[in-house]
Image 1 (cartoon, rainbow, N blue to C red):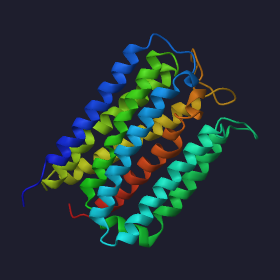
Image 2: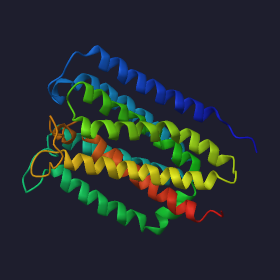
Image 3: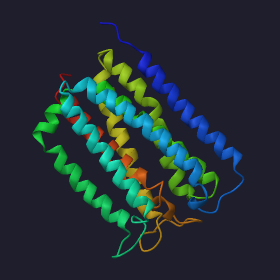
Length: 265
C-alpha cells in the first residue's frame, strides 16, 4: 500500500513557516522588558498555533474514531481545557501565590494526577488505539513553537538556562515528528524501535523543560542562578505551554508507548 506523503510535507512546511515567523518577529524587535509588552504578537501567534493544533487534532480524531459523537466529545474536551487555561491565564491566576507555591505549580501537580487517571481508563485506551499511530506522532509537530523560547531569550524575557535547552529540544522533536511518522508507516525492521526511542526522547525533553522551569523560577524554587527569573512562564500567554501543551504532549507520548509495546517487534 502506497503511503501518502503529502500530509508530512505539508506539516513540515508549516513547522518551517512557524519557525521563520518567530525569527523574523524577533529580529524586528530591539528589546523587551516584560512579557506584558508583547501581547499583540503572542495573541496572533497563539491563535495561529491553536488553529494549527486543533485542525490537526480534528483530522486525527476523525480518522481514528468512526463515531462522530465520540470525535466531537474528545475535541470538545480539548477545546474546553484550552479555553479554561486561556481564561485563567488572562486573569493572572497561575502567577498568583495564595499558598507556598504559585498556582501554576499546583495546577501542574493536579494535571499530572489527571493524566495518570486518564491512562487507566480502558475505554479511552481502546479509542486511542483506533487512531493510526503515525498520525499521533504528527500532532507533536506543534512543538516547533518552542522556537518562541529562543526568541524570548534573545529579547531578554526568559533566562537562557531555561529557554535554550527547552527551545532547542522542542524544535527538534517537532521537526522530527513528521519524519518519524513517515518512517513508521514503512514498516521496516527499525520503524518500531525508532518510534519508541523518539517517544522516550520526547518525554525526556518534557521532563527537562519542567525541571528547568521550576529550578529557574523565582524563590523559593530557584536553585539555578540566572540573570532574570523564569516568572513570565506563569503569565499569559506563555502559561498555555506548561499547563496545556506540555501535559498534552506527555499524554500523547505515554499513550503512544503503550500502543507500541503491543506491536510485534
